[in-house]
Image (cartoon, rainbow, N blue to C red; front, side, top):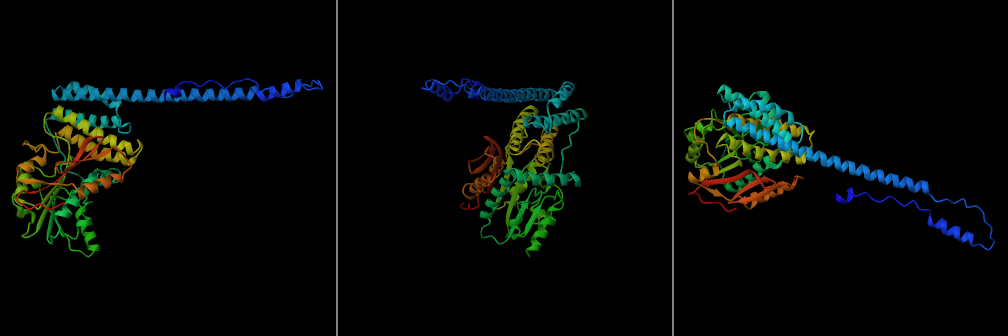
Length: 438
């Protein structure tokens, strides 16, 4: 860059040397005939070249200066936006709601859901802070539950989730690693019962349709069970799909899930913050210990929902900034898919975390890290190295972005963006079961 800023010297405007040599030879001719030479130095063409190159240099310098100025302006705006967001969050934490409300217009002015990644993050956090201020004034917190999702909302979430699955490896990572672990654990089993605590669209299960029994807490999109049943019917395979009324944390007996003798039970749970699907964490943990499934697969966001509001806000800001950065690295500012994912999925999660305090507010102790809690409840980790890790590595190779990282830690797999962990995939089984070899 420095070299490009140094202007090159203009081309020489001296006469053509061949012309001068020809002139000298003509002067030394024995005939001593001095005819006027009609060959003149090409002053005009060389001058034009010099002026053209000089203009190119000037335009290049102007372009580089504008680019540097634009970058500096974006960084300055991003830093100011970050400062205002943190200041507003501090006011909310101290219950200084009037001052927090006064800061929101300035934050909104600097942010945009269609701008740069920092501006997009700022827009959704500003909306969440505004909702938090309103809910704090009213003294009410209304987390989004699966049953409260309207048909139109579920369709929008459905479309956004499909887009997210196509433009980002996060969803596929959750499915591929869990499926590979389940395949290995079920080797040799004839009767299989898969309990999915949040099936969503069931994108990962068509390959498991030959194992005929599925139990899900609820069918938030209502059409998931029908689509899986139609797929099984097209293949001529038996299939059972049982949605359970209420939340899994309220189920007190395994019999309520239709558990039958001599079947291998697998529990799968992909965590998110779109809505509260399970209810009581302690009730969910109690049911898992009663079920004693052959395998539990979990995919957790590496994000804490416990602690003070300010600590939760800072961690969420860091986390979702990475997610927005990852989307922006592969999709342009005008991408419809990018906007859909950010608005319908990430923005909704941000609002639930900031405005509500997490996808649930039951008043009881929340599980901070499910892996740690399962270990205390008598489960041991099942390593995901080997085939699950290989599948995850192959998956990342399918996407053009180079910022994603994959790390194995204590048998679990962590998918991150530029060294910030985003998702943790892990597998568990009762400690008294014989572990399978990966």
